[in-house]
Length: 413
Image 1 (cartoon, one colour):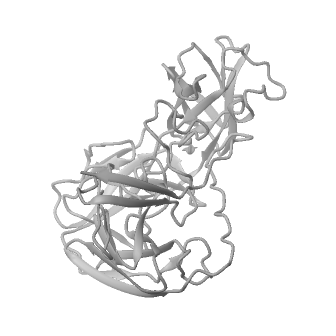
Image 2 (cartoon, rainbow, N blue to C red; image 1 turned 90 degrees about the vertical axis):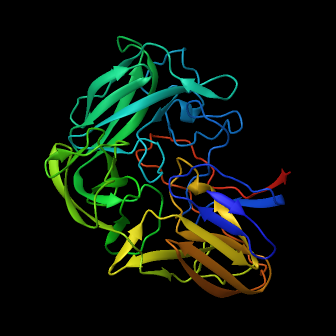
């Protein structure tokens, strides 16, 4: 991702596959870092070793908070706890290819998922859990134990529902911490981009030789599921997997391909359409992220989403660049690694003054401009964004901040 700025026309560029932030030598740049419209969790600060960082000791980032960790180390009712984990444990599952968090999502029935364990240290950081441990998954009617290794345990989904994953001292006598994991029935698998996007309803397509595509496993209600053992074939030949839910289709020409994807022990046909061009760009009406029914004014975070189209399909996985006049382009924290939500095909901006605001998007060699009128900010009080919902959260899971607005002065030589 690259950001540049010029008077009245700042530019923000999302580059597919890039995770870093590059700032050009243009003096002092003011970045407004604001949560995206989806109301997702705030971004993690600093480099993480485990689930916590010294810059954000109270934010577990993309990790599930154990029952003890969520309650300041208090032993849960009915348990006898070990003194070796006075602050409890954190539990991390597999991330989704589109950037969703590593909080343990539900495991698919018939599928597996490794769960990584870490503990909070006295200095507020965290580190992989190093003590020997036992594993208890209850009766095994919902969740089954598969294997364990250093700071990791692999579980399998048996039937839809929830079950405690208990991490104990060897022999199962004393509890280190526990976390309630979910299991879901797999209903469908669909091709998805490897970056967060906000598409329109309808068919999707992908550019040829544009890198891997993702495979989204979903339950009937749309909940995303995990199966680390997912495999995919094309015409009987295995496809390489850069990540557990990605497949590499480089080298294929324009056309529609029927993949044979096996997850949860069941085979699913997944159609993937590859194209070599984008016909046109389209744009959705701008919306106020904080109050969808409120006017767009100088106190609003405005989301403007663009779409790349070819025939009847929306082309996914593109790099997008945006410019704006009379507005400050913003980076939603939910677009940082490990945070789901806002789309790379959307511009997020705050009007500078009352009057016309113009936004221009560029992708695949095409450009589209749209505009809207911004009103002066009224005296209304902006309501807080709704708290995020963490999939598979353990009982008494700790609350996390929804988002922050930070002004960062960067001195660029």
